[in-house]
Amino acid sequence: MKIGLHLTPFYSPTDRPASQIIDELVPVAQSAERNGFGWISAPHHWVSHPTVWPQPFPTLARLSPETESIRLMTLVLLLPLLNAVDVAEHVVTLDQISHGRFTLGVAIGYRDAELEAVGLTRKDRVPKLEESLVLMKRLWSGEEVTFEGRYCRVKNVRMGFKPMQSPHPPIVMGAQSEGAARRAGRLADGVFFGPQVAWADIKRLASHYLAARREAGQQGSGILGASRSLILGTDKADAIQRGKAYLERTFNTYRTWEMQEPTMVPLQLSFEESLDDWTIYGSPRDCVETIQRAQQEAGLTHIGFTIYSLPRELPARLDTLQLIAEEILKPVGAV
Image (cartoon, rainbow, N blue to C red):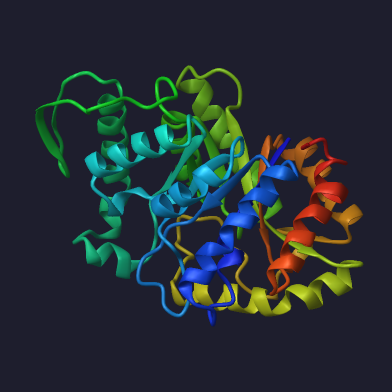
């Protein structure tokens, strides 16, 4: 089991200067590396007021020279919003900056405001994502490429340099539906199920992902991951109180952004669903038991923590990371 850290909650509260939010990510990344987390991941959204989402490529590039061994990941980059050639160049650059520590996480996105900004509709998301991956992989080969696609066309072009990792950085795909799980199995090196997906649905979606990998001739499970909300307390009741405010903001944001789509599994977007159904919460021992159960029942190899019970001040945040490492990562064998 490998466990990583989502940077999203470290962007809150938003009443601090943006420069302070970004500067404080440096000691967070260094602490995560020192305490044995497997990776740090940066998310991707546009025009997100009143929330704050620093863009992932410059954020990870800022953190790369401040760390040495921890992997850097986009989780997830909304690939249909972007030009495939531009992304291919950014990925190569970041892979070289980090000396081969970059993992590319992608997904199709769901917000109309973001799609409208680039003249796309929801129907464009899947074909553009798939086309982009095909073109990007060809460009990363270092060979001359001519490509005639629906969304991007190039003629007799070649990138200046290749990725450090061969044939390219690992690609993982976000998934909250059967179609997305199967798409990850066909096209990517792994999958990450979204944080609002229930444990029971993760087990079912994992079976679709693994079946698609087998059908595509892929060996093994690849990266079988899930993003999970981590809410720590002295016990489950205390954890609920500590995470309540962050939960409320998250539910409100995702409902406002209309995250739930008909093709998705039912997402956990209110307090009507038990936290037992979709989070890792309670005392450290409670959390260890939940993670061990997820390993056994769903076969997860990777879990990304989004810490909902994060203190406000930086020193307390760093103490929290150390506590998680000592009382959760070590007992589950992630360090």
